[in-house]
Amino acid sequence: MTASRGAKHKVNQPRTVAITGGKGGVGKTSVALNLGLTLAREGSRVLLLDGDTDLANVSIMLGQYPRMTLANVISGECALGDVIMAVDHDLHIVPGASGVQECLDMGTAASLDILKALHRLENRYDYIITDTAAGLQAVGLHMIAASELACVVVTPDPASLTDAFSLIKVLQRRGYKRVPSVLVNMAQGASQARSVFQRLELAAQRHLGLSLHYLGAVWRDETLRQSVLNQRPVALMPSSDPSCRQFHTLVDMLHLRLGQMAPRKAGIAAYWYEASRRAAPQKKTRSDENNAAAPPVSAKARSLELIEELGELLAREGDAALLRYEAFNALFALVGRTVDEATIEIIQAGLASVEWERLPGLQRQQFAAHLRQLADQVAAFQDNREHTAGELSESLVPFYDRGRFGEQDQLVKTLKELPSDISLDQLLRSLTVADKDGS
Image 1 (cartoon, rainbow, N blue to C red):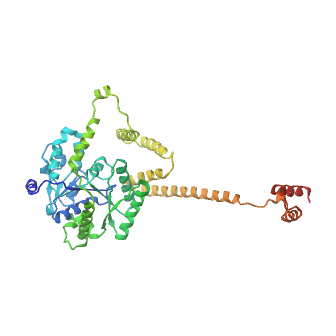
Image 2 (cartoon, rainbow, N blue to C red; image 1 turned 90 degrees about the vertical axis):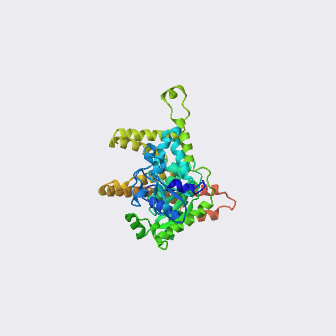
Image 3 (tube, rainbow, N blue to C red; image 1 turned 45 degrees about the vertical axis):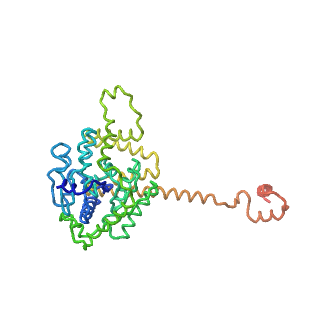
């Protein structure tokens, strides 16, 4: 079926969009699916790569459960065309697309056939939408880099903004040059959506020197929530329905944004092929390591290696509580050596990344109480500094020293008796002498 569709159209370069987020739970899969269905409904040829997890969340939202995913293609059990799912409005889905990372790990030669098949496949479509892996996983960052437009989904939840900022910061530090677009999901209205975007953009401008692009918003409503439970996306509802109509508006905004950007010459498969080539030289045999001098390692690369080694060590030890305590206590001590804006940002991002919902309710309450107490201590320390500064400033206010210069009426008397050309030093000495003589 896919081949016959492709035969009707000339080979072209599709527009590629990555729907991403700093952490799971912001609704990016729902956004990616409804966006893909709306584009397909308007007549575009759309391929949706489900790169969120190997469980194929996109198809589950449609009430379908794939027999095979990209993992089966990589293992050689089937061809790429065998895993494509055709759903409503002829939207095509590749489940388990996060398995593309395994192609990179296989090396250039082993992954070449799969990447060639992906290249032939992608050129049959007008749009390729990728529902990326959540957070800062390497495969998710690669999926963003492989697409020409990154759409970062956020919600009004402050933790969502912190996670999104961390994602944008990591992308920038890894050399990502394009301007991310931001979509505010679960907003109560246009005013709140704009406010959420402005908070994120203000942080990006202040700390990263980066201006973001506002793509639009999706409102929180009961219809959208029920559509997820019913496994029936709102994009399948009549176009007159408000929940469906907002995705048509979002598609219009997407067309406008992509119209401002020059199409990329290379597609997703070409990106992954280059990534595979870059990774290949790093895989050396033991004899190579013994016979060749090790290249210089940057501080950043070495730090990442040490973090990975720490993770492996903790995993081998079963994440022993005492070992974790000592290791991460030492890391926090390193962070705390320099207390500045970056330190605060590191602590905030670290706290936001913890899955607090996994803690029992009582422990969450105890920890929350501890954080409030700590916040009070920080505020009290600042108040104490301000109070001390106030006392110091008061001590610097000038005053008349009666112990040295006597009573003020004596000063007036002396001033009248002294000649007009006397210096200030002479005046003060005369006051002191007069006081000592008792006159």
